Image (tube, rainbow, N blue to C red; front, side, top):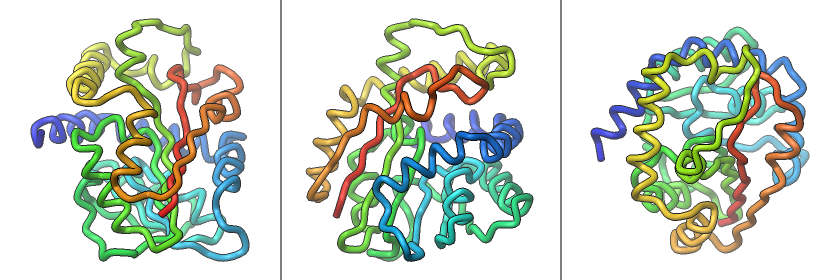
Length: 241
């Protein structure tokens, strides 16, 4: 399984620069307010929170939450992503911290964070049950996990392509990299069960007391087909310790 993690990191190292450019555009678009509206559904209001962005990529969630006054840390397995996350935070003038770290083995003391957030990460984790146990450990009592993801394996198996705008990130990825992404998706997906049902089971087994699944987030975030559009319907899973 360490081999597949190496493939994932290698793949995203090639996309890091373009990914930062797109995330900066997303930060300056209406999508930023839509994502913040989703967080406001669940986050306690009126106080700064210690938030860990797991699989931060180039730091989009860490940055939008830092801009709201929270103390944010982003971790990612890919060094190039962390380098670009630090650059993105500097460009935006935000105080967010970033570290290279494996999401399945986060190196923080127990009960370090009020909230864990993540976006399009858990589908890449070969040991998802281990990750959820570790994330539970990191949360303070009463803390929460907010996970935005999709069943990309099932979507790939359906093989139903949607026409995307010419400026969409998927259009700019070379064919050999698309093939590599599909190969990674199929390999990891073979070890996973239908989602988000499987996630709920794993989260309860990890110790989370209450788990909420929201299938409507996809329509709220991706109301139009633009350069940020995700052709695979995402869900939100919110789990409380």
